[in-house]
Structures are given as structure tokens and as C-alpha cells.
Image (cartoon, rainbow, N blue to C red; front, side, top):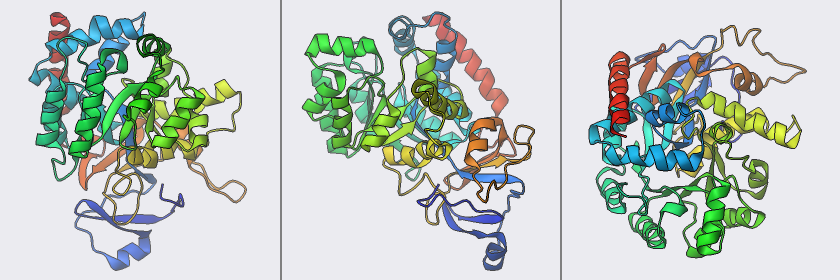
Length: 423
């Protein structure tokens, strides 16, 4: 996934410290280097780690998918916001631990993670080894939620923690539960601390209607006129954008986190991804609360096929670009991660090619070899054998290296039951 989308066969990659030192044919690598540790990747694919640009922790997944008749606004008001109100620091820590373990198993080496109690999530991210951009879900019009002061404290104490692996941004829930003063203060603080902003934006028709009723403007129009948008903003979803709002996104270089699987689950709508990309807006991929990144990749392609009645659009390589280089760009990390290149951080995944789902193995067809379609349609996160983040092996031969998975599941189940009893 470098600038030329090179596909190398019979090649090897050398890691020194937390960075990629060299990539070349295996014979050349063996002549130049002697490794302290070797991972045999025969019959395997080495890919950049996936970047999840809009993520919520795993407990939310359980609540989200435990509701049969799901209406977004009802879920938020009746279940989600009350749960955040009663959540303790330990609850948030185990929620985060579960989420980050799931992410590593899915090949997500970097997360743009939005939730409560950011300091406790930062502790979890440091311990488990994931790369994370963390933000709160500040909402001053909903009682009991994280405050802008909580978020700023986390920025001061944890931004650039773990040798830069942990970033902290400012985070806002969505415009209907945020005052104008809060929105303006968030932009002011993000500028002062030189960090980013993560917000849900144009996610539902209800949100658009509420903003028009309250401010006489659509959500993105309102933020644009306020001077809130910018290259340091990731807008989650961006489904219901008008032509004018897409141009505002382009002009301000605001990033969109496309979450197709979750949007389908909630009947939120279909984001205008092709229009956004054509306009030059940077679009990454996010799971939101959906528990499968590879399924999210597939949905990103299929949802455009069916709405446009055209199976030739959204090439598989473009989908993986959205999940790697575009995601890195959205988080201001494109010089560090998102592709396999000498000098970049060693964030990568090793996937098994010798599986029933990948048999027969894709080979050159009419003189060209393109592994992306078969990788997109047939691979699952179960094919991921090794995950390396910041040069550290966090998943080895399918086993998590930085936490006891059995203990984690027990603690997560216990935490989840306690939360259910509180709300």
C-alpha cells in the first residue's frame, strides 16, 4: 500500500526497533542482514495494519447487538447515555481492554477510539500495545457525561504517551447534545493544544432535522460557518451530506470516517462515498460498534454496488487504501503508518494464504496479478496469524501476547453484567 501499490513476491521485510528498516527480495535481505528473530511467512501475506477511523469499545457492541428493535436515538437516550453515566474507571478500563484485544485480532493496529474516561482507556492501550487516538464523547446537554475539562485533562496527561503510540484528541458526541459554547470551546482547545477533534456528524436524518430546527442550518453548514471544521477533524459517518456540505468538507480538508456495516445495521443510510472521493475528500473506514473490520471492508464495496447498480465501482485496492493510507492520513499519521515502506513504523499484519477459503490461491490472470479482490471477498480476521504494532509482536501464531485472553473474557463478562444491573 505504498504510493505505487507495489506487490512483492518472495520478498522479506526487516524491522529494527519500532520501524521498518528495509523491504526487498528475500535473497537480497539475507545477504544484507542477520536477524535476531525470524517469522516464517511462507504461504502468507504481509500487509499494513488496518486503521479504524471510528471506533467504540466492545461493551457497546454487546448492548448494540442485544437490541432487536434498534432505533439510534432511542438506544442513545435509553441505554447508552445512562450506561456512560454509571460507568466506573475500572469498567472503562475493561471495556477498553476487550475492545483493543478484539481490534488486534482483527488486524487493526491503530484505532480512532471514542468513549468515556479517556485516562483509563489510555492505560489499557499502553498495556495491550495497540496504537490509539483517544477522545471523549463530551455532551454538555446530557447529564452525567464526560466534560470538556475531563477531555482536556487527558490531552495534557496522555497525549503522545507510550513514545507517541497514544494520541489524545478532543471528542464530541453530536451536535444535538452539544451547546454552541461547547463546540466553540472545543475548537479553541484543539488549536491551543495542537491536537485533533473527533465528532459524529450528519449520521442520521433525525440529526439533520434537529439541527435545521434549532439553528436553521444543516449540521455541517453550522460547523463550517463556526470555523470548526479542518484537516484535524474526523467526522464519523457523514451519511446525509448535501452537495454544498461535501464542498465544505473538501474546502476545509475535513476527514470522513465511513462506517458501512454499522450504518446498514442501524438503517442509518448510505454515505455518498463516491461523491466524496471524487470531490477529493479523504475517506477512511470505521467499524463504529460493528464487531468485524473485514466485514466492514466488504460492506464498503457492496453497499456502493447495490445503490449504484454497478459492480465495477470501488475497486478492492481502493477499499484497502481507505482502510490503511486514508485512515492514517485522517489521523495525521500518514508519515508514520498506513503503508509498508522503509522508515515507517512497524505496524503490520501477517495473514495465512493457505486456507480453504483462499483455495485455489489467486495467481496471475492474463498477465496481471491482483491479490486484492480475493483478499477482500474471502479473507476473515481468523486468517490473521501475526500482528506487529510499533515493532512489538502483539499477536503471535494466533495468540495474544500482551494479555491473558481467558482472564480478559471473564472480566469483560463480569463488567458487562454489572453495567446491565446499574442501568
